[in-house]
Image 1 (tube, rainbow, N blue to C red):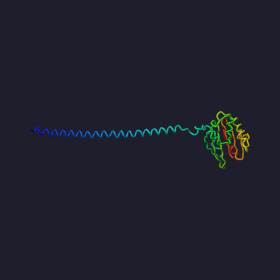
Image 2: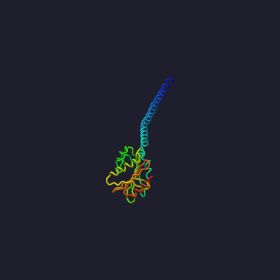
Image 3: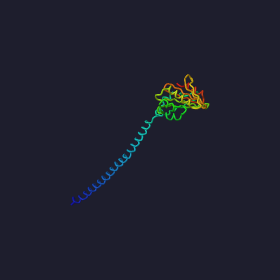
Image 4: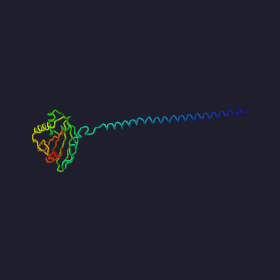
Length: 219
């Protein structure tokens, strides 16, 4: 009889231990399953954000590297180097301008009739323009202009003809600072055109002495 009484408790204990083990395994599985799910969700959420950030950075970098500088866009960098930094007490500030804008804004340079006369258009024009003021208040304008494929002498003659047709202009060819130039005088200013190699210079100011100093400083 004793072996029979001992069998039942032994079976009960075995069953209890088995159930406890099953409960522990189930709980552990739930935790183990939840952890990877959380990690995967975080990784999935972070990945698009990182890719978007990298894409935006790359796009910004490409836009910056692709944007041309002012002088690269207009082609006036070399011309700017031909303009003196100072004339007398005038500090000159140089900018580059596209041909079409320059032709329209500077009618007294006579470039519209000049271009027509030599068979060119504003797209053939490259410009570096400088301006500054003396301590006495006189403004000085100094422009370096190139017209692709144009003969400097032909341009100079076309300028003389066009400038002489404007009422109030006195147009002469004079020696200034050791250079032969076309000079235009009127009641408002003195304007000089000087051709050097493939570059045409326009110098203008209400102060004739300042114009002479500027022409003398040109290459």
